Length: 193
Image 1 (cartoon, rainbow, N blue to C red):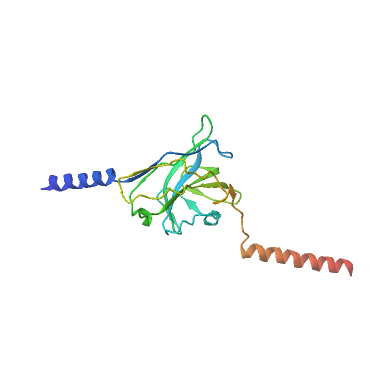
Image 2 (cartoon, helix red, strand yellow):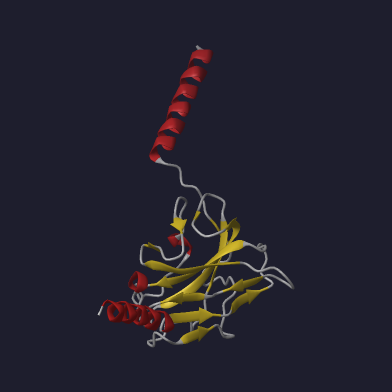
């Protein structure tokens, strides 16, 4: 009986692995500002609104494969491949339902020209680009394979070309700057008196 239960569990796990949604293909070639080893992520918009823009990426945000932020699921991490031009692989293997993903959700590739590895934390000055295609939509069949076609916007202005994350000063920084200005005004006033 125990062997039957263990065998059933193993076969169920194998069946789940066989029916994962696969996304595969080379997303872009000869892209500037990227080198071999830079981080790229397949990110799924789980809101169904097709809304991934540069505003989703802020200083301090950590991206890791299998993680989520806002309405977005990070389906996979891939590193940029060097060779005859730079290529951005868009390989992902996950199940519909992971990170609230569902059929019809749009997916993107985000490539970072300043970060390497999985589990990166964004900071001011990091540059990145968002790649998208109008047919980059999750299939309803969990065992289907999505392959990137020719319908590709390579760092297009529609999704913003090579963004740079700006550091927004915190309120304490503004307070410190205001204090310095006030101190400077007092010093100037005393000097004139």
